[in-house]
Amino acid sequence: MNIINFTPLSALTGGLLIGLSVILFFILNGRMVGISGIASDFLISKDNRIDNLLFLIGLILGPSIYTFFSGQEIEISISNSLFLLIGGGVLVGFGTRLSSGCTSGHGISGISRFSLRSIIATITFMIVGILTVLVTNIL
Amino acid sequence: MNKIVSLFCGIIFGIGLVISEMINPAKVLGFLNLFGEWDPSLAFVMIGALIISTPLFHLFKNKEKPLFSLNFSIPKNKEIDKKLIIGSVFFGTGWGLIGLCPGPAITSIALLNASSAIFVVSMFIGFYIASKTN
Image 1 (cartoon, rainbow over the protein chains, first blue to last red):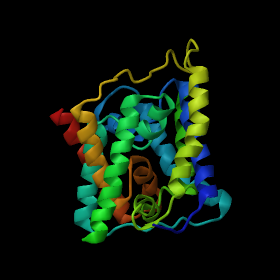
Image 2: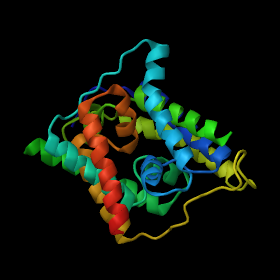
Image 3: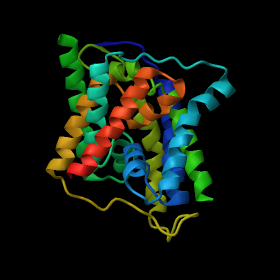
Image 4: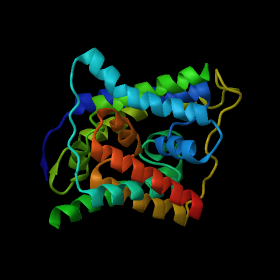
């Protein structure tokens, strides 16, 4: 194992902001953040639809507000394989709806509550994610 | 007031994803590449989020009600069932293939990137299929 591109400080700073968002949403609105829940409920359920939509709009405004204040452009590197993008997207949507949570809902909100369900879900998707990268690197 | 909170919390969350670089699939795949050239950064995203949310959650969970809403809504399901495991396996596979999970995927729509858009539309199709089949 070699360690590369390690940026602990920016990762920690971003994480603190995510934790702040999760806890404010709980203390003020009484709900635990899970983005797969917010997004899929917005699609499927009438409950809290406006709140869910506003949260999603907030997410999408985030990068522009960051760029406006920092003056830094955001660069990402993503696959351009149509097959993988569609397959990966459907797997992520189907899987997170089936297990009622994703990286935020299980990984942060659930673990904050010491939920055994969320701890098991997080360990499972982490291990499977690591194995998937291992396999795609070999192929 | 809770509408403003929802928007504000979304913005803070989105900025957190940008600063931590979780919005960048290459960064996420670097984190999942444990057996190759490993980038441990994203473990610190989780640590950063949990050191804020964990103590404050336990401090506030026994309060009577949230500030701008009638009651707390905390997931009650405690069952470790097939849906939880199978769903997490599917999610982990999709996450490992592309490097996007739901939050960063939706946030990255702002970058007007065709790949992100295709991924997000597919993800919503996945939500819909899961809601119809379960």
